[in-house]
Amino acid sequence: MSTIFSITQHELRRLFRSPFAWVVLAIVQFILAQLFLKYWEIFELRGNEYASVGLTEIVVAGLFQSTAMIMLMIAPFITMRGFSEERHNGTIRLLLSSPVSITQLVFGKFFAILGFFTLLLLMITLMPLSLGIGTQLDYWQIVSGIIGLLLLVSAFSAIGLFLTTLTASTAVAAISTFGVLFLLWIISLAGSSGSEEVASVLNYMSLLNHYNQLLSGLFNTADVIYYLIITILFLVLSIWRLDSERML
Image 1 (tube, helix red, strand yellow):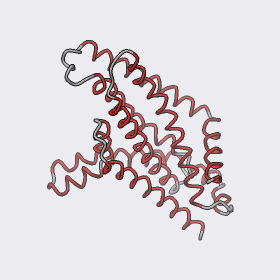
Image 2: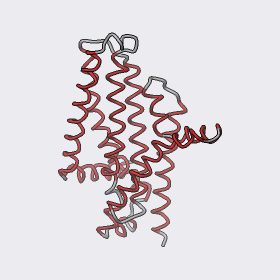
Image 3: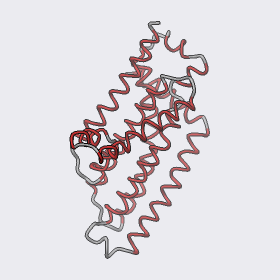
Image 4: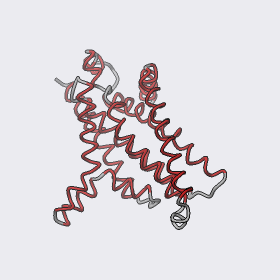
């Protein structure tokens, strides 16, 4: 665990040494702050219509829904360096021949990416929590939404990291990551014209459907297990891909 922690620290320091991470944090916070104010304004102007729904459902859930979309858009740029940069710089062979295990390398880089997203989500969460000073919130729904976001970005991170093991180009890694994430986001739409069996399979594969359940406050272990399966699957694929390369 100490080796994984050291790799995570190193990757986080490397990420925050570049202005890119700080720019992403600033831009995302600015965009979501504007959306947060817009949702609040809508609730104030049409409060009577939304009285039966509640502040949490309109403002907080709306903000978290927008957050998920923005995480999907920035995840390829956060994960694209992963192992692609190591290939591009020619240091991948050095990494593979080091005494550090492939599992430790993969988990170290994964936790660094997840650490960045966690910091970002903590900053975003302060906005809806500020409403608790003067209004009543459904804190259970907020907690469920935060857990959903953490599970979602965990899956994003694992998928993006795996795709960086396949190419030396960060641009290709970013584009392919966005393509895979977007496909898994909208895949349930393809089942609307098929049989019930096909629709149920595609609905289960959808990243969005499971997140919407958690966002609505319906904490189902099946949704948690789905994200854990996706995360573990792509981490194992990353380890397998690099391990097979080490044996060559």
